[in-house]
Length: 169
Image (tube, rainbow, N blue to C red):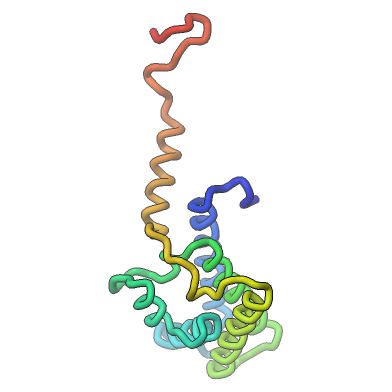
């Protein structure tokens, strides 16, 4: 499915998947007592710490030199987004499977899953996520460009060549 897409289109697709799975993860984590916005931010940091060798979301944003309010996930390439997608989906599955019902246990599970994803990447000869390059354009910028491209493809040209006449009208 993703094979025919450009790197930018893969980024957009995977970013959408991360958004959706983070919502599902938040719903599942709520069952474990991760209910407030602050609780969820702490919970997310536990996952990032596992995946990024101790870095929190704030640390990742600083390393990427993001301005306040820019979301770190919007400044990741497809490989880094995929690692985060795997972390989120597997943490959500673990919380459900093990019926984790305490916020501290949920935080630990998220950290452990992030660390497991990190170990897998490294064991397979991959690049740890903190060593991957930061794209020069955000997902929002790519989304705008993709919308323009699609709009351009939908608009017929005013100067189409008629194949029978061989020249423009």
